[in-house]
Length: 116
Length: 114
Image 1 (spheres, rainbow over the protein chains, first blue to last red):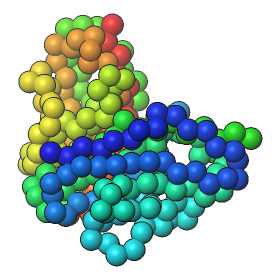
Image 2: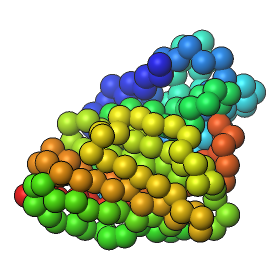
Image 3: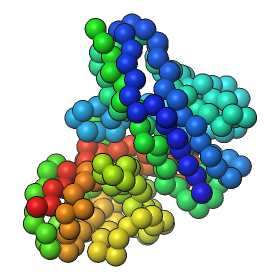
Image 4: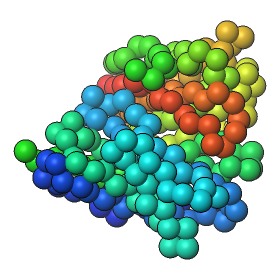
């Protein structure tokens, strides 16, 4: 079974500063993928970034980067130069890459507030 | 805009009733997933369809059922509704079955059971 843990229920960051949102995971699958989604107050789920367990380099997408430490089973999201529009709930999720299960397992989320 | 559409956006109904939530995946996507987001349970996977066939089942109650039609749109049917079924229901789609395929979420249907 897969499990995602996000230990920070809420985080505050000053506008233009960087922030790291923590995510640790547990799985017995040898091959897996890690995803981050953003959920603004309007409710939609927005895909941000993906990291495969065998990817050699950490994933980056614009201001988002994923600090992937396989041995520690962590996949932290780093947001650089925070903007007011980054205020939202952020979810870490994972899925098996080789088995038949294709669904995402989500963490409980971190509510990020960007302060002006 | 993810390209996934869900209707209706909001649904208010009474206990014991039955409702149908509709989802149209992104153009070309064959996989459709349904998730439920509630305050106490978080985001939970319900069921997945691929090209019209059921592929995986999660924590879906027997009162709930789903199907994917030949045009690839999907419907989630919720019956004998209870107060605890109030939640945000998401549909997501992906191109195929590869584990690395990104799931793109629709805007969700907010169900309120009174």
